[in-house]
Image (tube, rainbow, N blue to C red; front, side, top):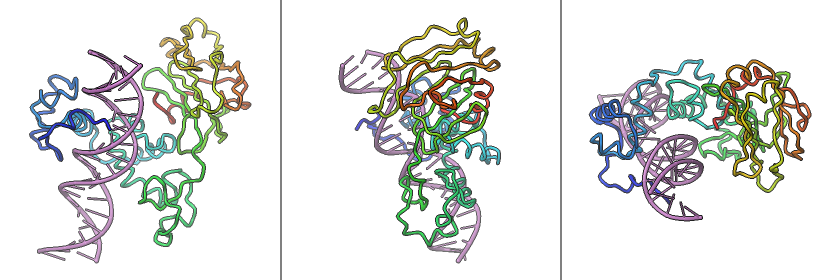
Length: 314
DNA sequence: AAAAGAGACAACCGCCACCTA
DNA sequence: TTAGGTGGCGGTTGTCTCTTT
């Protein structure tokens, strides 16, 4: 088992940070930036490992951290994001300025989970709990075999076989949009062009970052996308605004670069026609299409709207 | 008032992915 | 190509404080 080199070092302090240590770390990073974390402790005069310094900075000393209790809006947003992203705390934190992944994780485990259960909602699946699993009956079901596999402390069963792929849209911080579906403990979700949402499963991973990337399905034993598969974007302004397609090393993966100007000025305001010209067999190429192997219009504004709520950082 | 329990928060641990020599 | 170093992440544990008995 590999360990961080710093973990071998002896006589390093552990446990809670003293105000003096905080002062040293804050002073050093304010003056010099953190640079290589492994060298920070020595340069800052601390008997800590680099990882510990990094964590302390990120979770406590960073000047842009928001202090105080989470607002109800923040908590609602966390629940919404968790429904799509699962326990990807860092990605959830990326959408809550000033909040850390650790903070959100703690809030979730100590507070939100309980609130959801009190409302009769399974915090794992975000679906209504079966009556027998609701909090009011916890003690009655203590010996149930339906304990969550995630933690023995949970009494609540996951919805069976609900770990299908899902699709998530994201408007990234600046000018990029991503679309991705991947394994996650939520229902397979399909965002349709009419704005409705249905729950048809699909497997092929599609990412638009500023690029469209097709990835083989997670299961290598199933059919994969060949090197000839590709995505064609036929927005009238596309040809002059996209870069050349480039094949990456990964078999079956193709990437098309979108220019910043295109993303800024065109993509988010004009309809884009996205079309698959290949047969993806059982793997669904374009889940927003009514017929998932056929081309359809994708409206960037819808993408942007959905992207704001659902996301997966690539 | 003291002990026990619960909740909130901080920090550590192990793992993984990426980078570089 | 590979092994070591590093950053980052999520799960877990530790610690402190507040509440209840």
